[in-house]
Image 1 (cartoon, rainbow, N blue to C red):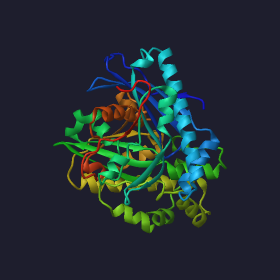
Image 2: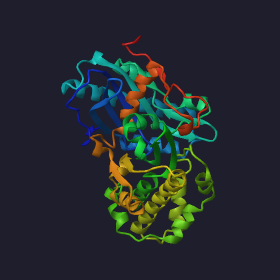
Image 3: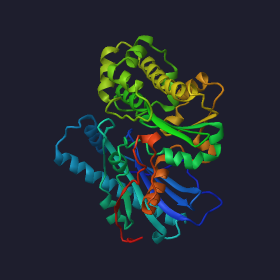
Image 4: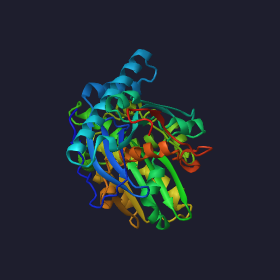
Length: 402
């Protein structure tokens, strides 16, 4: 895998001599492993380095195969579990080497822990079941660094859905702006957001698809030659199809999800390749650019439906929306949101000096530290947990005990 440095990743000029941790993340888009080196002093986090390691095409297909066909055999699941563990270990080791060379990391011994999210291959929020794979003991053994992983299961054990986990970190980053009302909206494979408001108000939920259907469609139309519609350019050139939009909005399982109250989560199990295949079969006559245009409007409509019901209807203030994730680069999608809510300021993580692409791996770097210190990172209003959960399982490295 070849590393790709994020343009948004930069070391802060003012360094807090704090604790160094590394975060590893692969999302539902299954594009790459994101790695972030973070230094924390208890109140402030400094992103020193963010690298991306794209998955080899064969590995990506194996992962997507597991997601599409959850009733797989144990032998194959175990094989991919260990392969991903090795891929994550490779990414971690290369990032540590780069950080030492660039002097972002003073020494290997200075690295307290690695937080590895792993790769989600199954998520059943109603059944309180979730599965992230990528053997963490391999990461700890190969890097020598204690690794914290499997963050979601502690929350499901307490009655939560195991997702979303980032709201705790969103609040940490933007608590100073809570009085005016702020949303941090992550546009990965799935769309989810955190609302941070006055009087310690915080809640979070998934709204539906972000990139998963759009990316699947462009890959279909390009016969795999293009993995995403850069900036939403092709979608912007098309005309929306009202019949298709109505058909998507009224799919029974999706309609049931829309009616659920926050907190709630979803995944590729609902907004899956099967939905896309069914869409292409039913509306094969629709031009590619028009289908992409309609899928973008569909994504936006589900987002706006939640904003209106869960924020504006409750008379909660909303001054800013900060977009993160790969979808933050979809200028067409962002323009539709801004057009619908002209009084709200739409920004990206880059406007705050952070990286949209690095945010999740950055969070899991911090989550590793929180786990080792015994601090919970979930709320009843974000995952539905009955009790705030201390999340993560520990695979000791050569630096254990810490």
